[in-house]
Image (tube, one colour):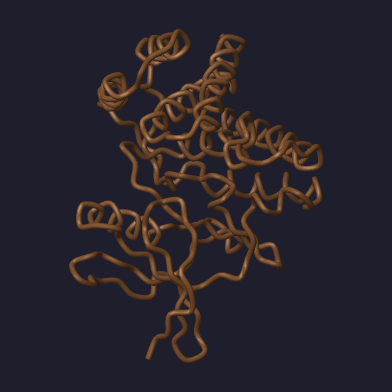
Length: 287
């Protein structure tokens, strides 16, 4: 008979719990309400269908799924590991740059296909956001930048959806597990890279923490490794590195705006305001 060990903290709003069945530990992720059932189903499917080109990068296996009191749930294997966000304080610089390269190699060009309506999809999302956000001067500039951008090069591929450092687990033997897959309005590996830059360039996962020079040095090295990987991808795609990086920065800007409607604390609001300005400046420099 499965035994509840404890409830876990999470960021998705779902109910996370650690269970034990005989000697086997597993994690249960359950919808907070019926409205979230479909979204969690999509996240479960993403996790089940994740395919890596390396046995070093994978996702926890889905063991079981179903409904409890009309709420969808799925059980997954328990991975004894730390998040890459936790590791960023003491990991060796060459290790974190190596891990970032491995991640990019496993994200890039999986079933890469063009999407003729991608411009309409992004324009619709931008228009929806405009009606949800109180707009200051910089937010208005950000929306204008996004509305005028050509999104046609954002190819459709499998996508994690929320690839922050908090959703990347590292085991003692340095295997990588991706957790908390998220359904998205559009799927592209470029969105995953933008999420990585959300941490490496802006420090999203560390917004409540004090500045730490040791961590920042490692994040800076990881960011540079990521950008070198982007340049390598550009050669494969016969595009300029600056072109792909410009796509990613525009997705990153969109990501920042998408967070605003859910923010209720002044510290995160201040973080977003500063991040919008920083990304706008990075886009301007690329132009």
